[in-house]
Image 1: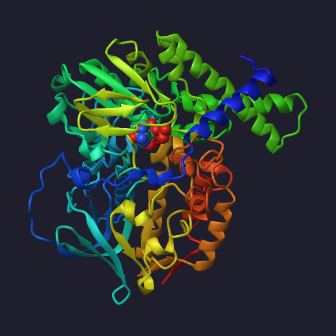
Image 2: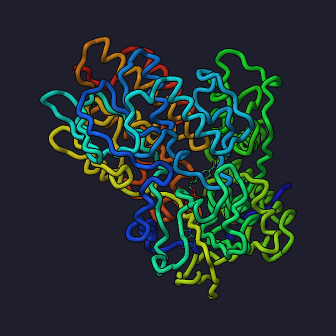
Length: 598
Ligand code: NDP
């Protein structure tokens, strides 16, 4: 569908107006930490805490966090012969976000063949193109079993302090169980989305009925279970849900099915593209040795605008990227020069086309025209986490499912018996909060402990003006410490675990090298770290941090990016695939340029 210049100008104007409506002076500060009535949100509802004697010993590698970051790091360490690895994890089992998030309908809409790590190594094939949370949690457990990572693991154990002891060249870890561990090396995979945040809506504490955050779903209230069994506890109940992000999009169809009445309080609609999930037929797949690496590369390449002969995953992520790429090619074929302006134009045209389709889909699916209108997203697709779902929009056709659109203003206040929004009181019996996680706040607040390096400097202080690393992993002044994430590295949003498997391979290679050469300490040099920060700072992600976007956690809630945010959002120039190539060469060269082994 071709848009005229007038259509485009009108779109830009609408996008700007919708964004401006939502800009607020308090930015990230609109959210609050769970305290008081909500303090339990930081606790574990899934596993009973069993008392145990404190542990006082030493390990080669302590792995903080038993989510996919910790699991793939543990796996890669075992593969290179480092056997003395101990996971320390706050939850009662491994799995990270998939341990905590058990809300009905939870699933990952990055294709399982690329999202689930170590499929070949563990001999597992996903059942569907996109798999549900219980299958993902099972896979996390499979990795832990396959690599014996449960051995010695300290589960239901929160790290309270991590301190470098230069006298013995060891990290000292303290935990909330009274453990005092020494570790030669520490890896930290504490994830960007693990600490729930609450909207600072006046009166939230006063709500009299059951109220919980989606990441701590209370099945004792709702009945049912994570596999989608009917939530009989909601029969006849008036249920409210605040938030319409990727989480709400997945649980709303279940709530709409089971609640007496459902009220969905919306500030900004998500973009809902087709998901088209289907069972995977292993027989139809050509799975030669090394297939997953090939699939990962293929997906990352297409998703970041590169060329491949085939599209192995074929989903909404690769679709938009290929539209952009094909437009650039067409422009060049037509004689245009390859310039940033060509790419920008291709990006804008593809996005306009895609978002026009997404809005048209709302009209096709949602019967009531006013509801359909309110569900249309007016921003670029990558301003917020794109959603893919085939039952969310449909849920609003149920007479018992009500959209309460607040035209960008959000819920006004909460009373003991309900929610005030769009100027009206809505009586509510059960309130679900789908307001997301702390992303932009200070590192130690999110990780829940302080890391103290050389000369008593804390990581929080060191990163007060933003992350400073070599490869997103090594921090000068913090020897033998490895951050496992994606920032200042590949920054591949569409497949988070791909960043993790690469980081894990790098950490394992460095630790193995230290072991082989008898080095007791390894640390990024100040110069190497500085060069890297300068390099990646030129490349704050094109859409992360985009001030033209509607506010959200991708762009610091629409507030101007300071140097801190810029650094935290930066990634390797040239993108994820270029970074993965770079780091693969770096770690296999054996030189480890930028690290000081001593
Ligand atoms: P988000 O931060 O994406 O969404 C929070 C929601 O709460 C937004 O809709 C926000 O509105 C809304 N909100 C906040 N304050 C108010 C208020 N006062 N009144 C009304 N609404 C309010 O959190 P999610 O848990 O949905 O998702 C977090 C991330 O988790 C995703 O971005 C994704 O990375 C990941 N995820 C991935 C999934 C997948 O693979 N499919 C599924 C689930 C999560 P507004 O938009 O206006 O700020």
